[in-house]
Structures are given as C-alpha cells and as structure tokens.
Image 1: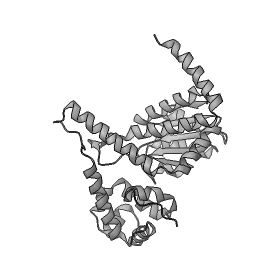
Image 2: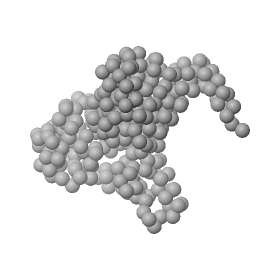
Image 3: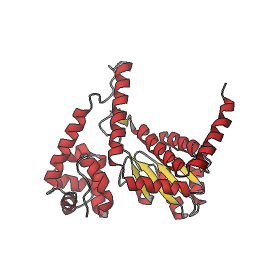
Image 4: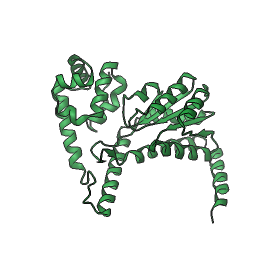
Length: 288
C-alpha cells in the first residue's frame, strides 16, 4: 500500500487512503471520520465495539495508515482535533452573538471548509468526474432537502452550456429517472452525510441501469459511496456547527460543482462557450 501524504492531518489522511483499506478497515475508518471526538476519547476495545469490528482490525488499520498502532493514531487524532479547534477563532453560533459575530463565524468556517476540501481532493478523481460528465448524453443530479438546491444549481449550470442535465426533486421521480438511464449517461448524488435514503436509492438504480455514477459527500465510506464510481469528498469540519448543523457544508458542495462545471466547459471550450453566450443572451431578456 502506498501511504499518501500525512501532512494535512489525520482525518484528511484517512480520507485520502480509504480506497486502500479492506471492507472492515474502511468500516472502522468511516466511523472514526463520523465521530472523531468520540474515538479520541475511547480505548481500543470501545472503538472496536462501537464501529462493529475486532480490535485486530483497529490495529491493522492503524498500521496500514502508517502509525505504530492505535495509541499513536489516537494521539495524532487528539493533536489534530486540538489544532483544528485552536484554528477556529470563531466556532459555534450562540444566542449572545451579534449579526457581525455570526457573519464572521460563517465566513471563517466557510474558508476553513473550502481550504481543507481543496487540500485532500484527489486530482485524478476530479478529472475522471469531469471526463464522465463531458461525455454523458444525459446527466441526472440527485439531492434531497438542502442538497436539492445544490442539485438544481448544478442542473442550471450544465444546461447553460448545452448539456442535457436534470435534477428531479421528488423521490419517486428520482428513482424512475435513474432506472431509465443507460451506459451513455451519468448520475451525481449529493449528500453531506452520504446517508440520504432516496439519494442512495437513485444512485444505486442508475448504476444498475449501466450509467456512470459520481457522489459528492462529506462522509467517506458512507452508504452512498458504495454505488459511486467516483467519490468526491468535501471537508466541512464537524467542529463548526449551529445546533449540530454544519454551517459550511453547502458551500463546499457548490465549490466542487463549480469546479466540475468549469472543467467540463473548458474541455470543449469553443463550442460550449458559444452555447453559454447564447444562454446568457436569452436569459437576459427576462431582466429589466
């Protein structure tokens, strides 16, 4: 196994190396990524029990990631979480905050999330996703709740450059449209948790229909990734929240979508820029 760079912190290091892990190791790693504070406060037997694997798997995971054992992995995790917390001058929003305080916290958390996402986004995965989307006859974007706004925004962007992009929001329509895709098509599932059941079902149906599948998620190893050919991970940090809602999670999804859009646009820039100009001119008729 080739261990990728550990300089960006233990959580990002684990994200970057998920593909190298066995099924059981990935299960433990995914649990750690979801609940790093809990694992940092656990002994090996507790971590093994809560993640549903053996202590031996935890030891093998730690060593495969380049640590001497769970004790060293845990020590690096504690250091990483402490540095992350210290790095956030602004953390959780409280009832005592002024509007300016809240704005500062939102901006700070967004900057951190975007910077971290950029650090561990794998170049080859991003380029593969761009290639898939550029060649697709139909692109279906799937998201539920807040993620639906990201899906609809993506649809609008890709449609403006002449691609056949859709973003159904009704779960039944998502499932139906996914099942009607072919090997010439692509589907993107967007879910911060990677556990949105309708989104998972749509991506699974698209894959079974032969389409190439991509996911945008903050949760490596989540159920959504099981049916994705290309996983694109965001990095909205768990320590920045408003009553357990990650404040910066959507901005990272929009950033990844924007990067995909620009990548596709400039793969065939002459023709697609013409279509974009045409779309912009047409849309301008609805402006005063």
